[in-house]
Length: 478
Ligand code: PHE
Image 1: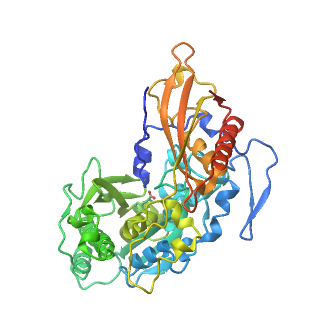
Image 2 (image 1 turned 60 degrees about the vertical axis):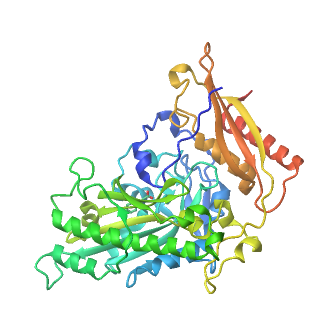
Image 3 (image 1 turned 135 degrees about the vertical axis):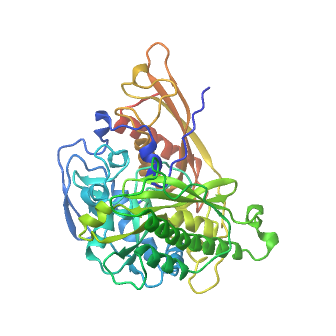
């Protein structure tokens, strides 16, 4: 039996653009909006026209009002406040509406027309021109144009069609940060680079060793925007950016460790010195770009993406004399590390046994799991509609074929089981040697965070899941 495991997904757009995915015409098809009655909908008092691009289920729209990043004492909100405390003097934007234009989410940030992030298998559309923001960078251009402050932070809910497992949820939270300098501002320093170095010197220092082996600028893989910046300016801005973010991550991990009562309570990995490294990255809206990774339980986790803002973005926002850095950090991932929260679904729990464990007032404490209810695994195998060996066959990517996309399976599981599904993973895949038809087997783990599911309940959920796969994706059950 061939077991194909999903490659772990990147939090950021880097891995997406690196994936050999193409927007095949078949992938434009969507399982939710095949009817022709496109309704007008109202979301928090704002009217929207839907069209054939609409693929946002009601369950996703219903999470808009939750605003976990603003809920007092919620771990996402506490994480936001902890990060904010490292950027004194910045302006904070915490209530920007999640429905934005395609222009804001993609075009303004130089995403090419065929970027996989734009596809309806990855992004929730309301109509052809309107999406649920997939990242807080969607607000960069407008915030630069408003030019209220040379430094800002934006915290918000973001939405992506993605895997179902303990670290992925279709709604999560990001914080965007940016800091710019104006070439035309008077300075007592000889150059702007010298001014920025003086600003670096004013930042708090730390004594941690952070691995940063790559040169700041790499003409081939991480180029200088040479028409707009000097290498000295970029070295200085990179130092400012990296020091600012290292300080944040060190303070978070120090707080996480302090949250254990005594060293013997600490999981073994927490007794090791914290390890961090900078790696070269790619984003369509920064250059050079980096990611910061932290060693956590023997794996390198990317905790944030960042870089030197593309001049074209500042210039289009009427700020041609400005230059600076931007970063984006996933708040769930940080909060999971900070409070030792084992499952991303917990953030959405209204169970007081979860919520009562966090408080802005008291000292930071690790989350104490209140229960571990039994897992219930169920498999479903099916023939994918209309595949032949030419369309992929053995070893073909689950994500890249016309008409079938794994994210549709994920979304149906969420739709049917809501937060009662913990994990959906591909466990077997093969193509029939004669017909070329492709068969997939997914293993679903049904488990409630709050109670033990009955057999009858999980059987019913699984039966509905199977039926919906047939109805919405046209698969043939085996
Ligand atoms: N918006 C990016 C993402 O979600 C992260 C990022 C923000 C990268 C700002 C660079 C600068 O993938």
